Length: 189
Ligand SMILES: CC(C)(COP(=O)(O)OP(=O)(O)OC[C@H]1O[C@@H](n2cnc3c(N)ncnc32)[C@H](O)[C@@H]1OP(=O)(O)O)[C@@H](O)C(=O)NCCC(=O)NCCS
Image (cartoon, rainbow, N blue to C red):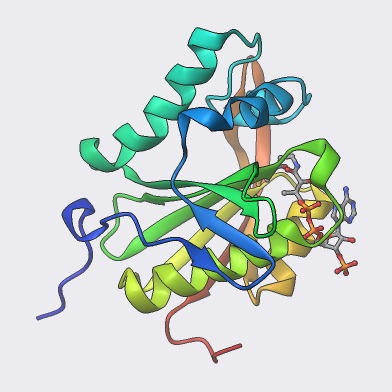
């Protein structure tokens, strides 16, 4: 019988590293990254990054990332550039209710965008989820006009499966999402 991962199997991975980008646990010293993210128009809408940054709100955000594993929701890591180890973004794998399925979420602070950092972090995290984490499927929900996010997924071999209409809410706004997925059985990249 197949055994799909539960959160107790999802001990935070050791830092994942491709020589340029590192995916590692959040630290309390990563507050500047949370502060930069809070000033972005899109990130606080779709995440629990505080829209109004304070020291307490920043520390609470970091504490929530660790709590996701202990509460059984998933694994949540910081994205850092390897040469500085400074956090510039976030990536998580959250357990969906379906066996063996994880949802991937990510963001990069504006100052670090368009340098391939998200693409590398999603490559590392997807490979970990499908190979080590034991998931059968990693999926992403993306707003249709989020061309950067769609490109990051396409670069990483995620397939576009379809559009879910009026699927998510951002405040009072309802949004369609595109569903992308990568399976453990897809060809290796
Ligand atoms: C989406 C996001 C994570 C991309 O991060 P990034 O580190 O800039 O992405 P990369 O540098 O790895 O770019 C990957 C590809 O996407 C393209 N791309 C990135 N941002 C883009 C944009 N705004 N519009 C069009 N293409 C874009 C890049 O040119 C690159 O493509 P190429 O290799 O064919 O040239 C970042 O813009 C972000 O954090 N946005 C706000 C939060 C968000 O939308 N998260 C995802 C929710 S589903």
